[in-house]
Image (tube, rainbow, N blue to C red):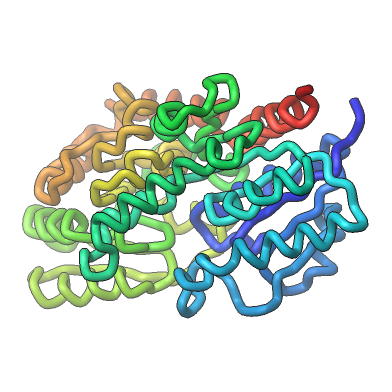
Length: 399
């Protein structure tokens, strides 16, 4: 099977991963290179670019006009402008290189990939690790007026049909269904879910019997991660179990600071820990002594379409989890005793946390091992990326 020259487009710094969907790109690129493909990565500037090129066996084409990243200043405005410059970067490179496939990661780079399909005459595969504009449902109306958000969501979902792309990868069955409803042929859409690195999240076995209890959450802490549900759950648990510690692993963003300030002011005895940003390979160490892992996402189209890696990582460790009723992750873990789903209600979320804490370790230890083995087999990045790259290869070679 002949090798492909692939233009891989992303709006996130490639390495090291910054959180969210950025981790997936590394494993996709590794699988492409493992299969012998010539990967040209178009991405924002990163430190030690020469070292990264050698480490992954790729060619980097770096965007250097301004800093990019999930914590960059004026991030949203930069995201709007970036596809225009990304498209020009690929066009310039294509003067000397004949690409066999354009592979876009996330909706922002998908805009550029779609515009490149016709002039370059190259097959395009769009990978959607989320419904990006769907998270704007939880933003304040004065920042994101609902009519504007509805238009943006329609635009994002229209990208595959707007540009007649050849293949679509999605993070969940829910998102795949939404693309099919826009007119994308069923055989052109493949849900691959969102994975984790099993080497970094080994099963911990019998949980530690620690006092006080630690409730843990890790991630990028955007607006939809921490809102009224998280606050009310923390209040309920603190009242029911004084001394409980809430540990938030990740950069101290504005939404996290607002939650902590409000909790300190309104919840007597509220206790918390904030280790700050932790590299992906070290996250499990900060989860291992916890009693419950939480995902108190607010309801939105974005959350319903997301396949939340936090839940997968908690289960892989053998850490009981509580999650709001997100459609995509709910369908995968339906009936799994390691994950309890609340309503989109903070007090109900708090009750589910208490219920997990009151479960006997002997009662769920066998279930924990079984659930951990399942996600290791099905959701480790390696099998997921083999599936995704095989789909991209077949798409590129389709007449």
